[in-house]
Amino acid sequence: MSQKHTLCITNVDSLVGYAVACRLLEGRKELQNMQIRCLCRNKEKLDDIERLGGELMQVNYQDQNQLRQAMKDVRCVFLLPEHSSQRVQEAENVIKAAKHQSVEHMAMKSWIGVEHVKQQDSQQFKNMHEYLKIEEMVKQEFSGSKHCVTRIPLLNQLFYLMTPMAEKQQALCLPIKQESKWGSIDLRDMIDGMFNLIREQVGKQSFVSQKQLYRLTPSQNWKGEQIARGMAIALDKSPEQFKYKHISSHEWQEYMRERKDDQRFKDRPHGEQGTEKPYTMPISIYFHNELIQELMEWFELASQDRVDVTTKDLKEILQREPRNVEEYFKNNRDQFRRFR
Image (cartoon, rainbow, N blue to C red; front, top):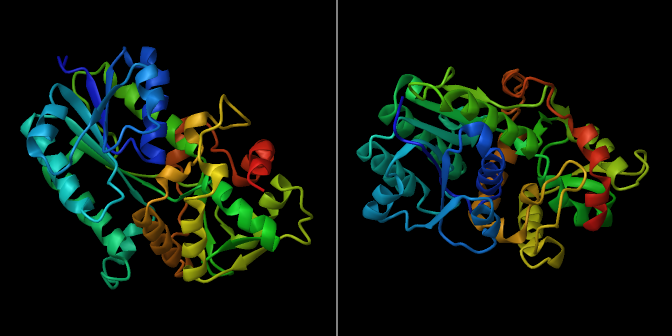
């Protein structure tokens, strides 16, 4: 069996990175007390990682020596591309450092529908092209079962950010065309699925993936108006009066930038509420311009009907049905009310 007993997660100063790290740390006993090394640019608001027993390392992703140190004794890396203008170079540096330190396996997070940008304008879909490029680099350096790519759609947690506008407009407002179908999943389901995949491998001779591509989707996709009906319940609105509204990308972008200074999103809540853990709640420190741009490109893919994909991957790795979006709204009514 491998002597290496460390799993490394990059970009833990992002919503998904932080949530994955905390979930793995909470379940460490089931992972044979594997060390969890968490890489970040900035340690602000990451105290829970150390409290739960994780190793938090502040790194410069352009510094190859620092990254080689970070990959020492690491068995598996979960690469979450940075929300930065240097994303491709930084990912390449992580991959090179992992290769140099003979890391066994690399997983990465990407986007549902990303393959459709191959034939599209590289400026209009700049971020998605970068994700595709990183996927290719991972496949090249960690071939076959030594890698896996996990593509995800929108996360349900984004709907919290839309609540102030929804309250004002009496509508769920997004820059996705009215008729397009798209899906969202609960971050809790995603991280539970990742936990299950990792738990399967920790005691084995070699760390391998059964599949090289996981597409984590809901069991059914919906039009915006159907998702708005679920949100109406969470906000105590009449589904007849609360609608879906297709807004411009510019309006959505401006609205999201304003959330950076919205005090309601400044801090994580204390304790578990509804189906949320404190670490699954979005806070304003995550709202980078690059993340906003990524989301806008995904919304454009949704408007082009490129993300209407459903698979059983999430159900299979969870070994249960994923939580559907209507159920999510019902179970988290109290959290949605906080942001009205």
